[in-house]
Image 1: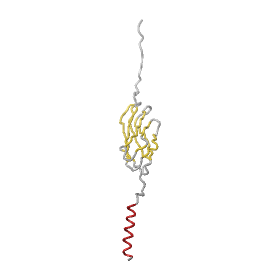
Image 2: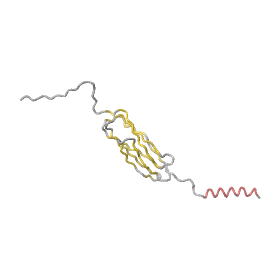
Image 3: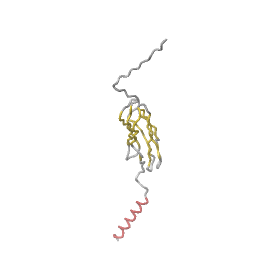
Image 4: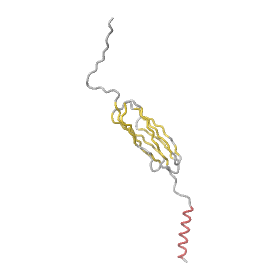
Length: 147
């Protein structure tokens, strides 16, 4: 009799487990299509703009809690909430005034994705000066008109 109770108890436990709703909480899942963008060579003073695309492949809304650039030269616009299976955008503007040479700007993205709370967006450019002064002297002169 005991032998017949064990398979019946196992079958009952399995049926109860399958009948229960999923006890694992649903989570958002952030996916970035791209994390690095290189503008290549640009002139100093140019305003650079790039839009990063992201997806929420989770079962709950993805909340972009904060987008924080590493310097005041970056202005960020972003979609704060992405429903499940939705796409969103993060747009970064960089004013290159005052920069020269190989530059890198970092933007941190903070979200409610439990597996990826902080993502990093990386923007790069080689900023060239508008005017280059060499070691040779330059003289500017004006001629007076004869009366």
